[in-house]
Length: 271
Image 1 (cartoon, rainbow, N blue to C red):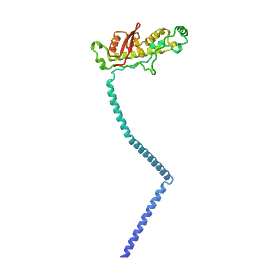
Image 2: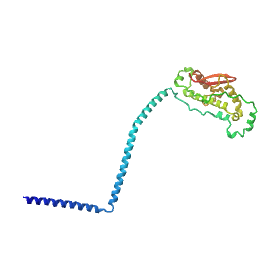
Image 3: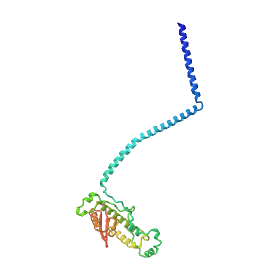
Image 4: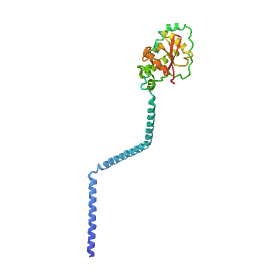
C-alpha cells in the first residue's frame, strides 16, 4: 500500500517537471522568434505610454483650472446681469433718435481758417490786415472749456407740447437741429479763438463782430450762435427752423437776445 502511494507521488513529481520544461521551451521559442525587433518594439510602446501619461496629466490640469474658474465666471455673469438691468432702466430716459454729432469744425469754419499750405499765397492780404488796429481780446474762459452741450429732447417732452406748437415737427428733426446748433456754437468759438494770421480776410469782420458779442454781459461765458448761422443741414432760417426755435425756447433749451443788429441764440441747460 505504501509502495503504491510512493509511486503515485513520484509520477506526479515527474509530470510537474515535464510541464515546467514545456513552459520554458515555449518561452525560449517566443523569445527567439523576433530577436532583433523585440527591444525596439518595447521601447516604442514605452514611449507611447509615457506620452499618453503626459497628455492625461495636461487634461487633469486643464480640468482643475476650469473648475477653479467657475466661481469667477458666475460672479461675472451676475455683474453683467445687474449692469444690463441698469442700462435698461437708463434707456427709458434716452431719446429715441440721437443724431451723430458733426465735427466741431464744419465747412464754413474751414473756409474761414487758412490751411497751412495757403499761408504763403495769402501773405500780401495778411500784411494788409495787420495794419488794422488790434481787436479787443476775446473773453476769458475757464480752463478745461467744455464743448457746446447736446441736450436732446425726449419723446415725452415733445409730446407734452400742444399740437398747435408741435405742428409737424418730429423728434428726429428737433434733435438734429440741436446737433446743428452745437456745431454753430463751436464754429463761433473757433473763430473767436483763432489767431488773426489764421483768419481769412473775408471772415475777419465777422470775427470782430463775434468777439464783441461774446463780451456782452448777456452772452459772456455761454455758448451761442447767430440767426444768420442757421444754414443747415437740419436747422435753416425757414418756417420749420423758426418753429424748432420756438419749441426749444419754450422747453428751456435756448434763449434769445438782440445785440446790435444781430439776433443771438444762447444755448441753455434744461431745467
